Image 1 (spheres, one colour):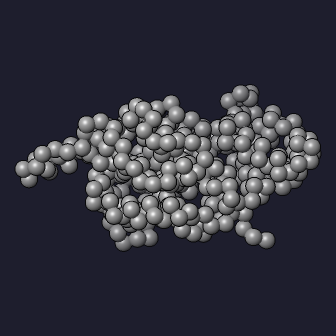
Image 2: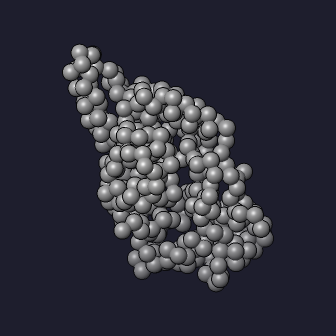
Image 3: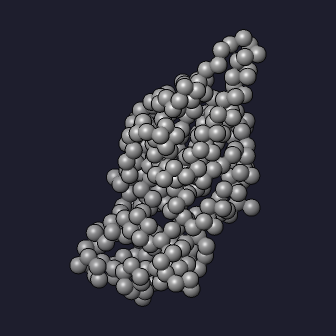
Length: 312
């Protein structure tokens, strides 16, 4: 049986990675946008060799989609550099313990902190220029991250206007583009970056669950089934929460599914999908799989972080 997710590396991403390397000397600071539902998977560690010692700021985006406790755990992990240490296979030196801020690109939460962090870096850059007798210049910021993690929404909030095209599907930004925020700040919006090979199927499946890779790369029914299996591993924990349910049920996966679909008697994800199709979509399994994924992505199953923070 083929894996649930195949390789997905569109040509425009490969081109953008080459252009990013070429323009790196122009960049002062990098904002790394991470999806709070799958922070470990969408942390772009693989580009750190390219970034080298560039100053980094992490935006833990879509924190409105996960429980507050999950955001707190992941913010602490990023701020102490836990993921840098966990995957430091390279000998290339780069900034550790980058500042991390919770953000919501749609509502603007955390955006002022990101802007202040970039300006703080810029102050250092222009102080160095002044010592060399050079005039100050705008600070140049690159915004990077996996496809569909909300980079363009963050940029639009930083700019206080619709400066970058934003949509709820991966692959909307297809080329590097400079965006002027203010007289002293410029942003480089990049297409979503992703490793050329998605070698870890578990991580690739979570990208598919969150709609962070294109649908042509995965089997919708298998991903929906795996989503239920993943939710069952979070049962009773602070990583899943349905605020509309009573306190004694809001962390219980079967109670959440009962609330949405009307039954709890199933063995695993595959079993759930077929039973739900019988009850909800006239035995159309594909339609049920798409409904389940949409319900997860639109918070109808509550706030969910698919990756517990295990970095200690």
